[in-house]
Image 1: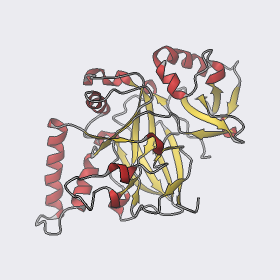
Image 2 (image 1 turned 90 degrees about the vertical axis):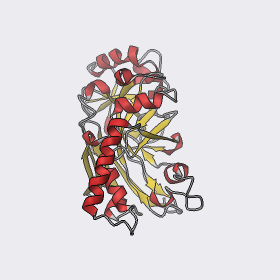
Image 3 (image 1 turned 120 degrees about the horizontal axis):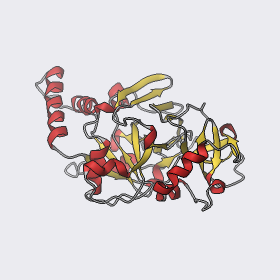
Length: 329
């Protein structure tokens, strides 16, 4: 397990199990490097973190009190295995939501016959992004819960994935059912935040056989384990400004992504509100907010067997995952 990086605030939530696998995973309260089993500490014995979120408004004050209560049976974190902090029913993924990332991708994929210089192309695309942020709508698609993996689990690279790539993202975790929520009230629906690495096979993003259909998100993003999540769910009250967090991904120790969430075209409130106009958000659902510049396709270096990704976001801890080729895990 990776070394603990203390999350922001007095406590965070997570899902844990004994290292020997002697019992099922349980929802836990993390405070000062120790974990309290919420199945035993709360009189209604939640089945998981999602159950805690379903009673979030009433349970949050209890969690605050428990975090400073030494009379309970706390366990050292190092004796536990850390799983993904929550099992979502729905995953909503925002695409093309970081200004510099979109500019980089557009320039990288422009036609060889494009008469513009790189500088001219970047300037024109930047103007389009600014108009989009001011006047248009977010771009959101849907992912599968079966992609969720733990923050320290190995990532299996499917044999068919020709260009597997990383996409570190801030994920908002929903606290209560939300439908047709105005932007002004959207953040009231967010319980907290965690880290997601939304892996993508670049080679299968676009359909080769039917170009008119466009993108194939099922194929390129939904392999088992393609969304390492966590390690912690940090309450929203502990994050002063989710619109000003540093998103950093290192590959084998080298920094590849290092950008502020300030570069998002559509902030969390606008994303949550937009999604809720069509879909009913449920407790524990994830809203992935997009990935900043610095993906592998930008560097010309895609993921391969043995690579180690280390992803961090200000106040949310660090996840560390190793890539293994299918058939060698």
